[in-house]
Image (cartoon, rainbow, N blue to C red):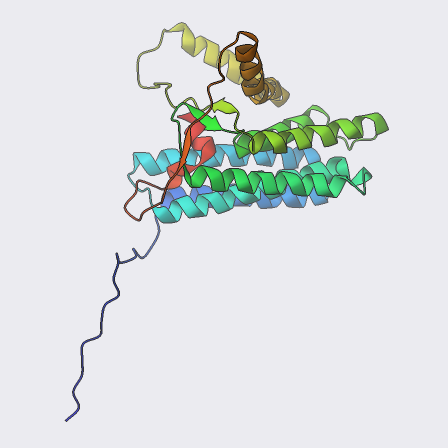
Length: 273
């Protein structure tokens, strides 16, 4: 008679099978925008490539918002969202900057574009493994760096032809890379309470802003530029006044399966809260 022994169960929590469909669809839309931005850049359609990066940012915000509203946050969503961000805000803007103008510098151009991609991936990894101050990000968020490149292209969609402007593009991309891996405190706007009552004229101001953006999307470049410069200017002003700069405090954290991690771990989504 054959005796069967019960199989030993592995220690640790059981993995949940399946994914949450609705927020994952927005993450897929994020990836799709990044992919088609890469395709557009390779075909010289730089304006379309830049706009797709901005649309990817909107999808990145929505997947986290919807995940929180529907209670469908998950560790899978957090990991999947980070992979999507590497494509849409790392690879896509790096190739856009290269095809738009950095290719004319065969020695330094490809390396600077690659450096931006590495800096963006480091920025995402640091964000996912650190407990950051709720009011500030440590370093420029990767969607902000991608938006900076996209807005620079939208200001002048045609390929860079003037030789004097090519070093400016190289320096701009290099500056974004350094800002992403810096310790400069960037406002996260998490303390902005959107549920409280606002004055009635606020709606009129928002309508003006939407009208300007619809009339000319390049208006957003001013806002993106101000956000990119906000942290360095704040630190310089504080040092000029003899104050110690307020850095974003970050402590390593060990993610756990039961942690409240999910699609809302996105940097772009956190900045919009």
